[in-house]
Structures are given as structure tokens and as C-alpha cells.
Image (tube, rainbow, N blue to C red; front, side, top):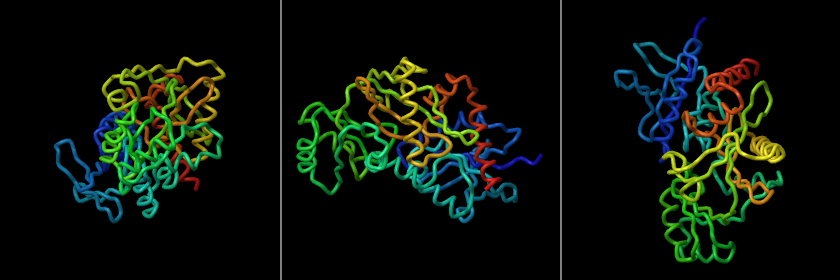
Length: 333
């Protein structure tokens, strides 16, 4: 049997590139090498390349997304996005590139990725689902800090979260308790994006629920509760062990079912494919939508692998099943 060539993408154009590399190590291990030739392709703002075990780099030909190995041209049957966080995967740019080249890929398409990555647009887009959301305002870089502060105080009640509108891994996020802290929070967020979203703080328990497509069915995984020692699920809580993650979450059957219902509803409304993760705050008996992540972390300790194991599945089997599902869909298209 001839093996199919899979391009496993990592790196990226944002501060999340280091997280992408961590995910790539595990995803590479999980993909079945008896079925696929797996080529780890790193994307940076300056170059796209494959690096072999000796450290030698081979540049990607961007005209057709191919590489030349020992004078043999390698074309790819599928591009896999699991380990690529932030731009250009989470914002849909690389998907548009592959669509033009007619190269299939796992994960969400251009529109779902772009909308999900833009936190403000995402809230507007899924409003029709009826899910509860925190009140928010959007500030642009060209607006003065004075006017942004006035807008926040006029429209929202403190405390608030100030965060880049289009970024992930909680880079540039500040929880603001007092009016005197607003300007500093805005400056920090504007380091990562030209747009900043400010949301009212919803006091409650934080949860995350993975959703995937297998055998044509949209399925929600067992949710995780995130208990952060830093006050919220920031970078340190996510990647430096400063949080407690309980999977499956300690919720009633009814609460679990409701969160999974909202997760699937949002997944479908956004037009997501393959795999995404939906985040919530539970206040009283109401689930408030936080954000959708179309390329969730895939290290061994990441939330989705935790949830996959809680559902009784092997993570390697899960990853290979999602890849096979996408290839089957391409074959039958």
C-alpha cells in the first residue's frame, strides 16, 4: 500500500508559535506512520520549511505547496492543522491558500476560522443561537486611550476583561478591577492587536468543551472545569501548571448535557469542521459563551486530549480517525 503524504503544520505568525511547536511534537507521535508519510512543515513570517533529523532545512515551494527531497518532488494529499495555533490557521488565511491550490485540510474552513478568531465578530455571529454572553465593547488603536476608557465606563460595569480581539493563549489579557487600571490594560492588549475587546467580568465557574465530527455526526466531548490559581485561565494557567483542570467536570447530568448542547449548537452555527473547543462561564444556572477555538491545544496535557481520554478513547486513535474522516470525505466529494 502506498502511503499518503501528510503535511503536519506548526509554527505560525504570532506569539503562539511556541505553543504550536509543543502541540506538534505530540500530534506527530500520534499519527499512524504505517499509513502516512508525515512531514512536519514549519511556517514562520520569513520562511516555510521542512527540517529533517539532521537539522537540514528544505524550503516549501509556495507555488504548489511542495518540497523537493533527494530530487524527488513531494506533494501532499492532506494538510493537518491540529498543531498550528494563531495566524495563519486560526484566522483562515492558510485555508484560503489551500483552497486555491485544491489541497484538502483538516479543521475549519476560511469563514468559520476567521469569524471564530475575531472575538467581537464571533459574538455577533452566534447571537442568533440564543446563548448568553457578557456585555462587551470594541476599541480600535486609532481611538485615544481617553475615549476608550470613557466608552468602557459608559457602557460596562467593572470589573472587566481587556484582551486583544484577535489573539489566543490569553496573551495580552488583563482583568481590570478599578478605573485606574484600564489604561494600562488597554496598552498591554494593543501590543498584540489593533483591536481590543472589553468584556464585563462574569463571576462563575469556567468550563471548556471539545466538539468533533466523526462518521458525519457532531459529537461533544466530556467538558473540563478550569480552576485557575491566577484568577482566570491566562497563559500561566494554561501552560505553566497554574491551574487545576477537572475532566470530566463535576456537573450534574443535566448541566453537562446543556453545555454539550450549547457547544454543538455554536460549532454548527459557526460552520466548524473536524474539531473545535468552546469555552463557557457558568453563573448560577446559566452558561455564558466565552469563545470558540478552532485549533485547540494538542499537547498531552491539553484540554481536548484530556476530554478524549475521559470519553474512553485513545488519543492516537481519535486523531487518526479525524484524519481518515477528512480523507474519506475528499474521496467521496
